[in-house]
Image 1: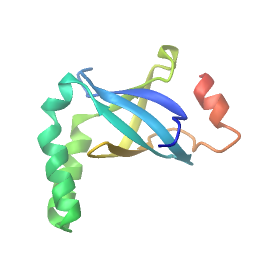
Image 2 (image 1 turned 180 degrees about the vertical axis):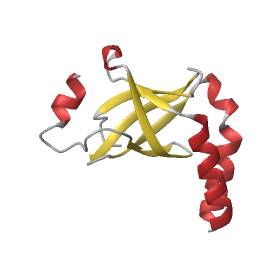
Image 3 (image 1 turned 90 degrees about the vertical axis):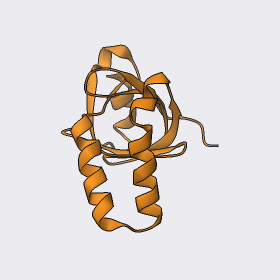
Length: 120
């Protein structure tokens, strides 16, 4: 497994800690990594399981519906340091221990800006 570039806490709109994300790849606004669920992930686990099933079976109408439901939950990140505050994300996908998402309303991250991003 690749070493983590940065670790984030994933929260839902009301602030419940859903899990921990160890990012292993950053390109522009796209981040990939490993997901470790926490207690409140149980509130959303069924939705992500349905999304994974629909994706694996190419159920495109269902994928669209589930993507909208995921978006409405308003997931966001905190970290890698607490002083960074809330980081808005979009296109969150959790499939088993794999996770991907895009930064929302933030400049894309380049190789040169990774250190700056992580030091915020």
